[in-house]
Each structure stands twice: as C-alpha cells, then as structure tokens.
Image (cartoon, rainbow, N blue to C red; front, side, top):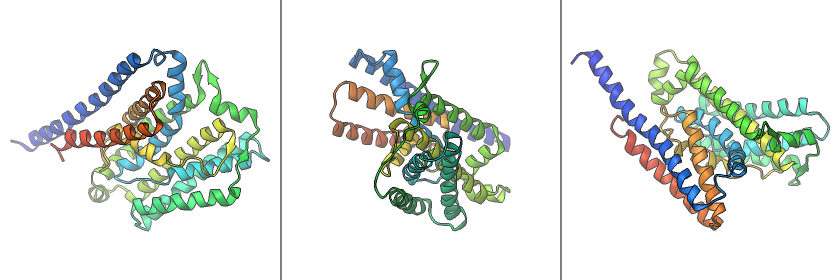
Length: 323
C-alpha cells in the first residue's frame, strides 16, 4: 500500500474511535436529561434549567482553561487557589476603587499567576504536577495573609449584578461562560497557536523539531488557565458578595473532572473545549437531579467519584486502538 494510503488509513483509524467517543458523550448527556425528567417533575422547568446553567458557570470557566493545559499533557492543580486569591483581590480593590479598575486588575493578576506557573514548568522544567501542587498552597497562603483569615465584604451593587443578574432572561454568569467557551474554541481550532497546542500534547519532541516554540506555548497555556481562573473568581466573588480566602477550595478537582468526563485525554493531544462544556453540563445536571431527589450530599460525592473513573475507562477503551 502507498504511503498516502497508509496515512489515510491511519487517520481513519484514529478519527472513528474519537467520533464515537464524542457522540457517546452527547448521548450520555441526553440520556441523563431524559432520566432526570422522569425522576423529578421540576427538572425541566425553565427556572431550574437556568439555575443549572448558572451553577456550572464557575467550574465551566475553570475547566475551559484547564482544557488548554491538559491538551499539552500538563495539569494545573492551582486553579482553585488562583480563583481564591483573585476573589480576595477583587474584594480588596473594590473597597477603594471602581469596577473599571478592580475587574482588569483582578483578571490581570490571574494571568500573572498563570505566567508564574508556566515559567516554572516550561523554563525551569519543574513537573507540572509538582509545580502547580506547590503553587496551590502558595497562592492560598497569600490569600490568607492578605485577609488575616477574615472575609472582606463587597458592597458594590453593580458588581453584585455580574454574578447574580440576568440579561434577556439568561443568567449573566452563563453568558460569561458561553463567551469564554466560544473565544477558547476559536483560539484552539482556528489559529496556528491552537494547532500547536494539539501538536505539543501529541508529541512535544516532534513539535519542537518541527519548529514549534514549545516552551513559549506551554507558558501561554498556563497563562490562559490562570486568566480563566481570574474570570471564575470575578463571578464567584460577585455571587457571594464577599472575598474569602477559602474560596475555590476543591474547585481544581471539579474542573479536571469536567475535562475528563468531556473526553479530553489526560495524555494530551486529544479533546476540545466543547467536549469539556458537555462534561461540565453532565456533572451539573447530575448534581442538580441528586439535589432535587433529596440524595444525601455524601452519596453525591460517591457518584461524582465513580463518574470520573467510568469516564476515564470509557475514554481509554475508545482510544486504545490507535495509541
């Protein structure tokens, strides 16, 4: 068989399992929606569906940023702590400054924390797991130092509207999530940078030999992840109207869970932010129906953990033929 024929066959063998995997994720979400509608008569009500969209916004935004990192075969365990420090910064700045200053500064700080992570990983060659695990404690410690462990109240009514208001009947946090989703999708699928992100995750050495500035792009993906954590921190602080140093604890695991359930490979090179969005919705709908049916919160944690394990198993089964 010719080289071109082999290439076509290889591409087909790789694409078919991925297409089945993507279809499976969507079908699983549709099945969960159908089952949920029978379990609770309130589930399909418009207020409840809008509430689900509002509730998944913060984790969804974090998960979109995490997708960039995981596509390069990395991981960021510090996003929850970055969110928490940004929440404290938003609250502190709003004590004396306007929204026009607080929001850009808070988002910039999120991006700068991502840059710090990226420098350590890309240039100092510290393993991503170790670097971001250390920064999880580091950023959380700074948040406690800045507040002395005392929450900072937010009294700006306009800022409160960002996390709790509605635009044309749609929760503003959900609109922010969707805007973040479409911008991220454009960057990943329609720019040279996005194609290089996939190349790095597939084979970093080959990407480097092909002329891809792998260190710079790995720095950028962690910057994007930190910036998304800043956006999530803005929504979080607005919803609670208080800057607390414990904000975002455990959210890094929720974000990773959404990415994994969406089918993005932890080994890099395969996935998309749209699949992450579906994974986020799946977890959000599952949590919502468990709440509506009165399931014990501790049992809900068991269900979430089991879901992650099952998702990884299914992902491995769908991709093992071409790895």
